Image 1 (cartoon, rainbow, N blue to C red):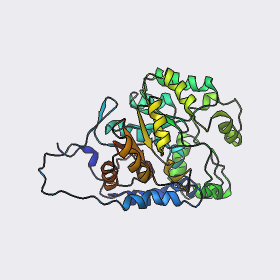
Image 2: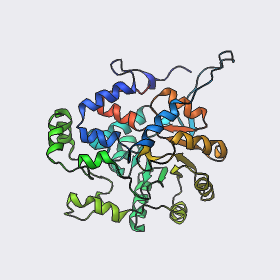
Image 3: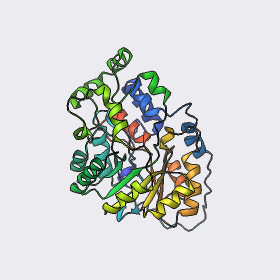
Image 4: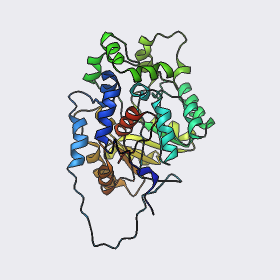
Length: 357
């Protein structure tokens, strides 16, 4: 099999580090801090990467070579590569229209894109620009009426894969966001306004596409809701603890595939199997929820080693390069998602083509 078009390099930005540097120069500091930061002292954020780097691959150079085929069968679809774009909240804050940019790129290169409940594009818009070739991550609503309506909206656009987020029993404290005065959406204080002014391309694009908002959730908000009250709306509208009965109720009415995201322990994996989940994404939320936990790759090694023959075990967290993807696959991952590298690409180049090596 020949090398797919997916791996054509932009010679000016051949590495993730190059894209990150360019992205940092194009977006306001408060937006970059939102993308880059973890919770508390960011210990687990660092471990996500360093634990990957500690894994060494063992080549077998004399083994018979039968060609290369990196395409991967997953949930009835053959993707061109074993990696995809995970759900990222407030994508439009980091770069205006980022959800559409990334979703279109995912369809073009035949890899999965997962839309977050708290992204800045709606279910219907992403379905339109991808011809319904997307997955959806659900923050579990507190009210069954909202939950059922979201599920019906997904059925209406023929979305087949539902990713239920389970790893946010409470919101982790993120010091970078506190210092930046970030809320949802961000409060434009004097510092943030100054940071936006010195990033004129970002500011003009934001004016063109509109202030970032939770587009999927807009229909459930009271008319005239002050944006400063959005945090209260989120706290009141979503169940942070997603226990077995809530997932069972979704399983009863959702006929497509159900993936549980945020699984890191054997007891939770046993419950996922008992609930009839079709797969799991091992994840520590990019180091943004539990600073004292283990890295995603360490969790993957345990979970995939014990349960990889029972269902697809995927992972995200700390993946920054092609060698990292290879490390994850060697450790048992069926599929890999990487969030920050794709956001670096969107923020660095906008609609231009960027390759993540």
